[in-house]
Amino acid sequence: MTVWIGIAVGCLGCYLLKLAGLSVPQGVLERPAVHRIAALLPVVLLAALIAVQTFSDGQSLVIDARAAGLAVAGVAVWRRWPFLVVVALAAVTTALVRQVVPGS
Amino acid sequence: MTSRNTSGGTADGEASDPETGWRLTRTQVLRDSMGVAVATGAYGISFGAIALAGGLNLWQTMALSLLMFTGASQFGLVAVLAGGGVPLAGAATAIMLGARNALYGLRLSEILRVGGLRRVLTAQLVIDESTAMSIGRDTDRAARLGFYATGVGVFVLWNIGTLIGAVGASWLSDPRALGLDAAAPAAFLALLAPRLRGRERWALALVAASVAVLAVPLVPVGVPVLLAGLVGAIAGLIPRRTASGRAERTAPTDPEPDPRPESR
Image 1 (spheres, rainbow over the protein chains, first blue to last red):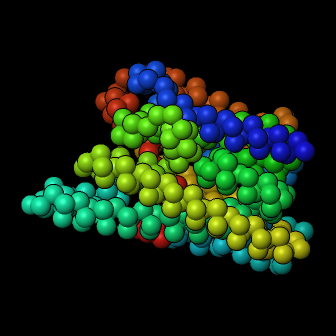
Image 2: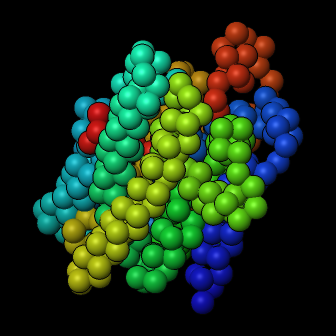
C-alpha cells in the first residue's frame, strides 16, 4: 500500500513539474542557479544511484558480482554500444559471476 | 545544440514551393520521431523487467510508465524501492530527477502555445526526447510536429515496451539469478554518460557517488541518494564567473535526451 503512496506522490510531483514549465510566465525560472541545479541534479543523482545500487545491500557496503556487471557496462557505454546491449551485458556478466562464485 | 536536428532542418528553407518544402520537412521530422520512439520503446522493455525484478507488481510498473512517464525518474523510484527505501524517498528521488522537465516546458511553451485542456494533456509529453526533437527546428510548425510526433510515439511504445518487459520478467522465478539487479545500475550508467560533458561534471559525479556510498551505513536506505541531490543543489548555487559559466546559463538547460543509441 505504501508503495502506491510513493508512486502517487512521485507521479503527481513529476507531472506538476511538467505542467509548471508550460504554465509559469517566462522569467520566473529564468535564474542561472535554477538552470544549473536542474542540469546538475541528474548528474549527481544518477551517479549516486549507480554507486549505491552496485555497492550496497541494505545498509551494508558490499562488493559482489554486480561490480563486475557494472565494469562491463562501463566498457559497453564507453564503446557507445546500444542501450539494451549495455543492460543485457551487465545482467549476463553478473549472472555468470554468480555461477562461478556462489554467494556473490 | 543537439545532433539529431542536423538532417531535418534545412529542407523547407531551401525548397522553392513552400508546400513541397513542408512535405519534405514533415516526412523527415516524422521519420526522426519514429526512430526515437522505437529506440525508446526497446528501452522501455528493460524498465519493465527491472521494475518487476525490483519488487513492483505489474500494475505499479504500468502506473509509472503511464502516469510518471519520464524514464530516469521511473528508474530512480524503482531503484530506491528495490533497495528497501521508504516510498517517499523514492518519490523525492523521482521528483528531483524530473525537475529538468520544468525547464524543458519553459522553452517549449513559446513554441507550443497551448492553454486549457490541451496544455493539461500536452504537459505529460514534456520529456527529454520530445524536447530534443522539437527545439532547434527551423520553423515553429516543424517544432510542434517534432514535439507531438515524438511525444505521442514515445508514450505509446514506451508503455508497450514496459508491458512486454514486465510480463516477461514476471515469468522468471528468480530475477537475481539472471543478474537483473545489476541491470539497473547499468541503465543509470548509460543515462549518465551523455551528461558527463566537461571536467566539472565528472568531478561532481564522483563526489556525489562517494557521498552516497559513505552515507549508506549511516542513514536509512534511500537517503544517500537524496544527500547526493543536496550536493548537486549546492554546486548549482555556487555562482559561476567564468565564460563557460555564462555559456551554461544561456544554454538550453541540458536538453540531453535519454540515450537512444540504436538511432545513432
